[in-house]
Image (cartoon, rainbow, N blue to C red; front, side, top):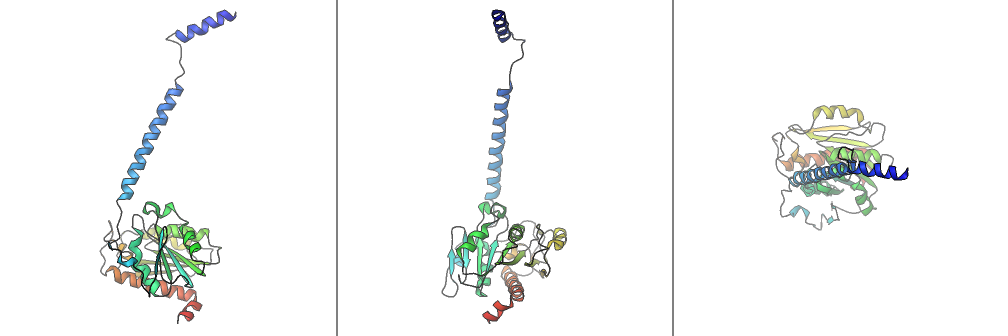
Length: 275
């Protein structure tokens, strides 16, 4: 009986009509195909991410430290202003924008008494490091009150950080430039300021309007007449944007005015000390 079974097994192995187990080979082919697709996807992303908006200040003069305005470069950020300032602002850049392009705005804020810090993001996309503000805050423990802000895609990521840290007593509020929140902040006590240009054609106005219900009580929206989407930074024209009737320096100054006024209103003690 055993010999008969062995004979039939041998016959089945040599019979060309017998079913064969092909799944290991098919699995290998499928895995190889997936690997090829993944490699191509990564390559396509790297090409896409590599074509980004560069800082117009090619000589990086805006990163030069002076006696009146110290500048410190960390591993993934640049900080402008007094490290012992009472109020600090961590800023997330827009998608595919070199982070140092926001140096002029950061310098303007630093001149008003803030420690203003712009953060470098992996591949220039803020969603790769939503918690980047943690590193900055840890580096400057003297700062007692922090605001988180961002431009364009950096805005929703900053808002997510704010939502995740809403119970952190040292986090005072959120600043969105040409951006809106996708996170629900309505039940928080955070301050919230939205600033956008009247000629901004990149910002989705419908989503901006819808996001008002997600904002905390006391949130303020400021429109800059003649400003556009790219004017918050110094990286040149942006695809799909409107044409500004004011230059970026004017838009950034008006933005700093709005931020300074709103924070002072939320924290009158700091205004009294600065005076």
